[in-house]
Length: 255
Ligand SMILES: Nc1ncnc2c1ncn2[C@@H]1O[C@H](COP(=O)(O)OP(=O)(O)OP(=O)(O)O)[C@@H](O)[C@H]1O
Ligand SMILES: [Mg+2]
Image (cartoon, rainbow, N blue to C red; front, side, top):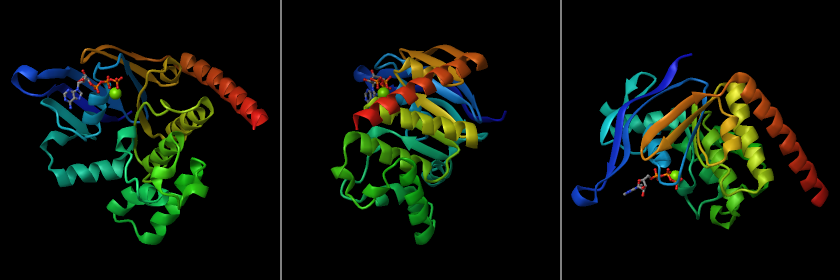
């Protein structure tokens, strides 16, 4: 497998002098194409900071991030935007987004930035909305949706440009279990069927076990980095599918 992200001596210090705080301390990490990586650790351990750096949304204080072998730390903002737009999908709640625009406009934004034609981007955005079961909300203002629906709009926007890597920070964090299951299913289907690389920050150990690899962070350092054995991953996946089917059935009964 090819390496898609490589990180060397990554350090992030927030603030200056007496308020300086080292959120990431000398991290080395290499992620291959098609992997699904869970990043886990306590609150404040540096997970989101790492995610933002890997997704080229913030600059490290020290160290380098290579994307497909290209040293991103040497690139200007135009080139960085291009990589983000073409290769990445983000599911970060805090990037939710243009409250007064419609759901459809929010979803097609990455395509607009990538200069995809009007007709095609509308079609792709509608498809993405269908995938997350929100096609009926396309014309609503984003701010009028529920929390879980907003999260699904984020997912639609993350997948609309057919990304190579999806970065997801607590993608199921604020969702009821049925909606969370749907998102989980979608992410792992993209991984298995399209080879999309997944990098997921999560507190949910069950979600972590669905990944091919678990990276644990504590106080800004990687304290363990383990592949999940194929058979263990398979078992977790089967157990998860059963549970998701049970939740779905119970919901249908309740509805
Ligand atoms: N902009 C900032 N300025 C100063 N300190 C920051 C900033 N962003 C994060 N930090 C600090 O860096 C540390 C790591 O933050 P980070 O958001 O990466 O944690 P996290 O592991 O994602 O936590 P959580 O699980 O609560 O989301 C925390 O102690 C946080 O207070
Ligand atoms: Mg966080």
